[in-house]
Every structure is written in structure tokens, then in C-alpha cells.
Image 1 (cartoon, one colour):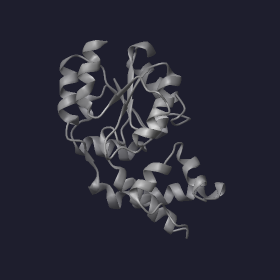
Image 2 (cartoon, rainbow, N blue to C red):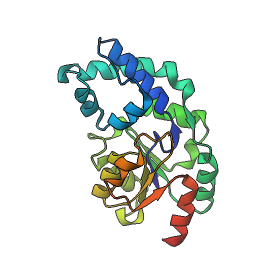
Image 3 (cartoon, one colour):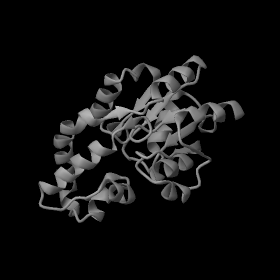
Length: 212
């Protein structure tokens, strides 16, 4: 099983939204004012999100640098979803290989996983700097599949954004879209990509596992 991180394992959308807004403000550009509006507009790769909000293409890197500067101010708001640790423990007991394919910068991702003591549950971790392309490119998922030493047909990718489902399908793995109040994308956006499964809790992966 391969997991997205933000919105799937990590409850971090408020921290990302606020750090992004501060980065925009530092360049005199109004950010997305509400969390719901952020969820409706957010897209990957992040460069496309920035340009769609009026950031000139030649300033995207500068905005990303500012985001990385401001993000630690809100890192204390990040948590894991309530069921995460127990589900990972049960999957590990069943001998399921697990990986992460995330667009989060590797440093931030490692810090979060360590803070919540869940690093050891994952056999491999693919962060932003580990691939030349980011989701919706399939490369992060493919890289994680290869590092796990399995076939794409043996894997399922769990994510909360349209781009997760697009990446998973292009990588040839099964896809599960998780929809929570704090997911990055609402269900109506995920439905457009026709994932193999819809779930509202990671516990539902047990049912998928038993039926596969």
C-alpha cells in the first residue's frame, strides 16, 4: 500500500493554507482567503497553483522559498488523523509492504513522520526531492513501487486529491480516494477521476485488502 502524506496521513491543510497565504502577502498578492476556497482551488504541481493565483512564472520559485520559510511557524498545527497509527500497525502485522509517495519537501516530511513516531511503519519514502516530476506525474508512485520491489498491479495508492488519482492511474496501480472534512479536495473533485475505491477512513483499507 502506497500512501500520499498531506490530507491522507497528515492533517496539515490549515498549516499549508496559512503558510501559503503569508508567502503571497510577502509579495503583495492576496492569498486564498478561506480554507474552503483553498480546497476548491488547490492543485498540483504547485507551480500551476501559484500561476493560477496571479504569481508571475518568474516569481514562483521565490514564493516557494517564502512558503518554506513560513511553514515552520504553523508546523505545530500539523497532526496525524486519529486512526493512522493503529491502521499502520495492523497493516504491518499482516505483512503489508507500505510506502509514501508525497510532494512534501523531504525535510518537512521526515520531521512530521518522526514527530508522530510512524517512520518505522514505512518500508520506503519518496519525497519532493526524490523525483524529477511531481504528482500528477506518475513518477513518484512508480519510483515508490520500484523501491518496494513489487509490480504496479500489486499496489494501491491512497490519496485525497485529484492529482493523486491521476498519478496512480497513470502508474498502473489501483487507487483509493479518501474523503474527510480536512481532505485537500472535496468529493466532487475526486469523483471526476473515477478512483477504484472511495473511503472515509483508513480503516476501510482492511475491507479492500480482504476483498482483493
